[in-house]
Image (cartoon, rainbow, N blue to C red; front, side):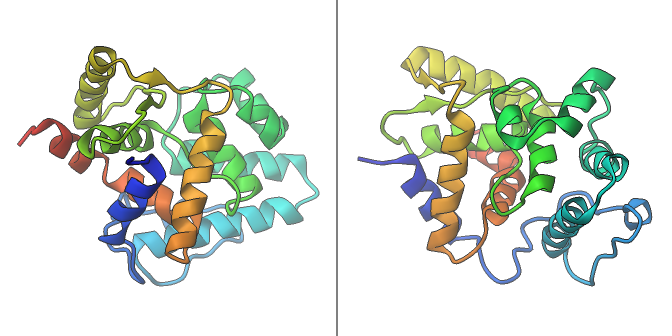
Length: 225
């Protein structure tokens, strides 16, 4: 039987290496980094790993709630490009614990998962529209057993948005099980951890691979080219 974790492990074998140049998403604007954070010379993969660690270090060592909030705001809004959160939502992302935010399920997950990465990037990982479509497309593309539809999140990216529509139609026609709202994020973390162990890397690397390959996986799954 083909399992999702095993399939992602096999998929990652082609890409994960010492450089990981496949991660070439938008460059970090280093002029907007929080005070006291400097990034070393390296590719965007390396800089993003260091950024997570530096944000976590400052968050852990700060006695100021205001500074902690600014770090989370930076990662969600400046780095992440999410500008649509209400102040009430941002207050939750600032003040709730990781476990409390996880209990929110898919609501606001593209934002709150960034917040808890600041709490601990070795334990938590971002879950957004690109990661979600990659998880879903891999199941269809490699025809794994017991397919589960991870939450389909809205996206401004045209390829991802097209993939969202097609994967929902596919899941409905093929009667996929829907991911359990209460446990899917922890299931996702478990997948990342097992794949990371296989390649002696970290969960961020596996998450970044799923993020980076979103369009490619949509195009392969649905033969869009």
